[in-house]
Image 1 (cartoon, rainbow, N blue to C red):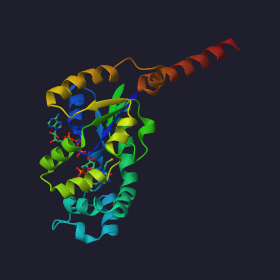
Image 2 (image 1 turned 60 degrees about the horizontal axis):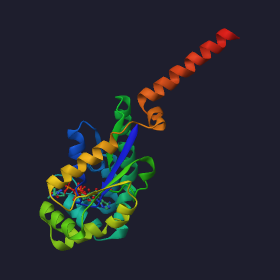
Image 3 (image 1 turned 180 degrees about the vertical axis):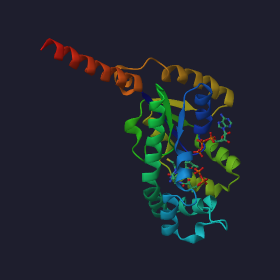
Image 4 (image 1 turned 90 degrees about the vertical axis):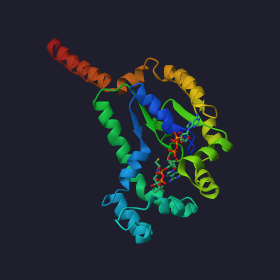
Length: 229
Ligand SMILES: CC(C)(COP(=O)(O)OP(=O)(O)OC[C@H]1O[C@@H](n2cnc3c(N)ncnc32)[C@H](O)[C@@H]1O)[C@@H](O)C(=O)NCCC(=O)NCCS
Ligand SMILES: Nc1ncnc2c1ncn2[C@@H]1O[C@H](COP(=O)(O)OP(=O)(O)OP(=O)(O)O)[C@@H](O)[C@H]1O
């Protein structure tokens, strides 16, 4: 199985690219969705986070006030690290479970959309790594427009992540999303061809069909050897 890493900066366009993969029948594991589940009221992650940050981060209905928690952690590196540490086991096991489900269904190519792919050192499990890049001005404006946030909040969120230029330097494939959506679609078409090229042997053996073929080969081998001796 080929596990394509999809990452970038906040509001650089990962979800937009992710939707394009889904439209082309390539399944996507979305780490943001898994992280949201990890913070759902009553979950293990929720209990740990509320114990560490206190009931002030809760809304009246007991759900986490994400805007409030975001303001706290995106302006304080120590608190952000604490939140990351508390949620990391739930997020990584959630990602693993989703990969396993897709593996069992026999998918050959899947995409892992993980904003913190490099920061969480998950990049070693994915190949190729696709980084969605935008210039800093565009990133700031798109983030403020999408989240209806102040410039200060938006800058805090951008600065909470590894620099987008550093991510770009570690990519196998870069998608420059500074242009229009039409430009993005054109570039995506080229990237799709690369992502869908035939599997290498290693990728094949890691797929469900490859693993089953290997198992079948071993069983046949054992039976043949038993018959000979
Ligand atoms: C702080 C929280 C509650 C803010 O929620 P909010 O709904 O405002 O943002 P959302 O979850 O949609 O995230 C938006 C983007 O913020 C960035 N981001 C999220 N968490 C982090 C983080 N810990 N460090 C840096 N950037 C982050 C990502 O680019 C993400 O795509 C939330 O982001 C969270 O629980 N973060 C910790 C979990 C995590 O690490 N998520 C990233 C998955 S790899
Ligand atoms: N090429 C583009 N032209 C104009 N707007 C765009 C383009 N690409 C994405 N956008 C818009 O920019 C915003 C950010 O994009 P998107 O939500 O895909 O980013 P993201 O990287 O997934 O963000 P996050 O890290 O917060 O999950 C969205 O409002 C999206 O509609």
